[in-house]
Length: 88
Image (tube, rainbow, N blue to C red; front, side):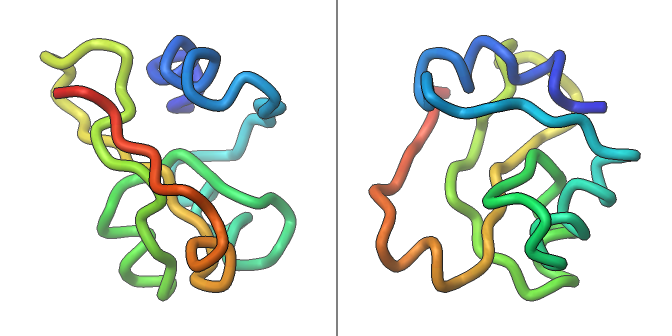
């Protein structure tokens, strides 16, 4: 769902990432929580409810987008990864 809205940010920031679609934005967070993927584009609320950590905030390609997406990951992955922050 959100892949089209963050495609340029992912390409610029994580050029080796493979984009895999999820059933929904919440589904992307659920896939992270289940260990199916390393990170997912979702809402902060979905990540929070599943105990995930925000890896990067403000990842939408267009600053004026109404939906605010974050890149979430399981807590252990954040401890060893550089923090990625999108310009606002």
